[in-house]
Image (cartoon, rainbow, N blue to C red; front, side, top):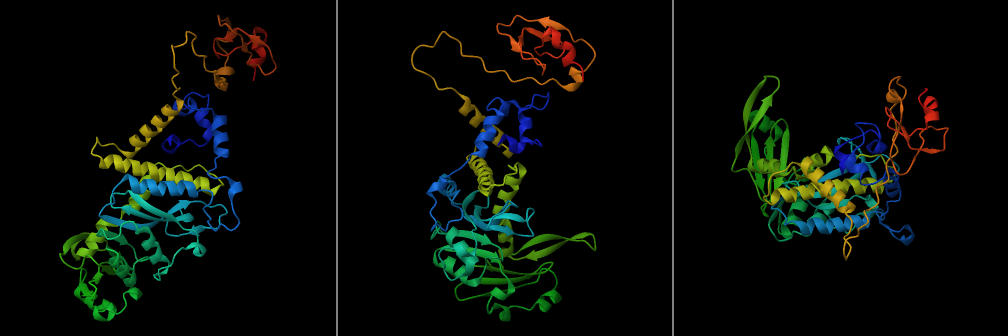
Length: 421
């Protein structure tokens, strides 16, 4: 977590002996060798338990994802307004479920379907595993099945769910309404069925001017709105229509002026509550864990670790406590976890009179500009109990003498060899 908001070009620089580079909160908590050893052996399942008949492509990370799914749902009550969209976990290595989405800032990676509240809290997610692992089909197409699976825990509670034109269709809105969920989304022109013939044509709307609107409703109270903004937009909804209209401000680049445009209620409601998943992406992208790793499941793990921190911050903000920005919150969580891991367990009985053993001192590396300077390199006899290893590479003895300029142990006979470049 600390490496997410304090970025160094190389991981080993956090443990550097150079002045101004070493980061105490990391270097004092764990040695660099132990850190690299843990990271290289990090696994979440036993590979020997894998069965050839298992079609789960997320086998290596499934226990973590399943735990997070349960925790996210149990930690907060679902909000009334929620949205469904896609995320991308950046990864360009070899992976069968890797996707290419050109409009994303990081186009290559693992795709994740996410359901989030308008506040930016993630309730449900599903990692896309390709067309062969779509699960149960409801007859609504791949996108419609995703929406139905992500919403199966909020049935008959009158929640409002928003999605874009990749998911939205009239059959999907009908299926959601049957289970007590109100849906709203932008809809492609070829998915509005017979509503196109009953709505005003694009030519008529352009003649009326920007802000013109045409609305039609079905017998199942599904409203399809055709609205002219900079282009023609189709909005389908089971909970909102044209009224009450409001006014939106739009900038005209050619005239260099701001104009007021009439906006239907369904469009205003969609714009207000659709950005939940984008809000999560924005928060994750502020202080992400972007260390390169060839193992895809490590990338997925650290992405969801960032999402978990954002969710925890959202819960903290909802609790009504003192306001805290994400950076300060993440830093406090990281510091608390490090301190918890470094505390020694108290032992029973009276405290021992023997003081605890001193920590092993880190090897000091003398900067070249200090080591090879021409002034104040004099030996000094110290009163240390145990002699230290001489820092001259050609010497294997121990000594109680140090160089008063370099502050390292040196035999008096090694001074010339150590201070010559």
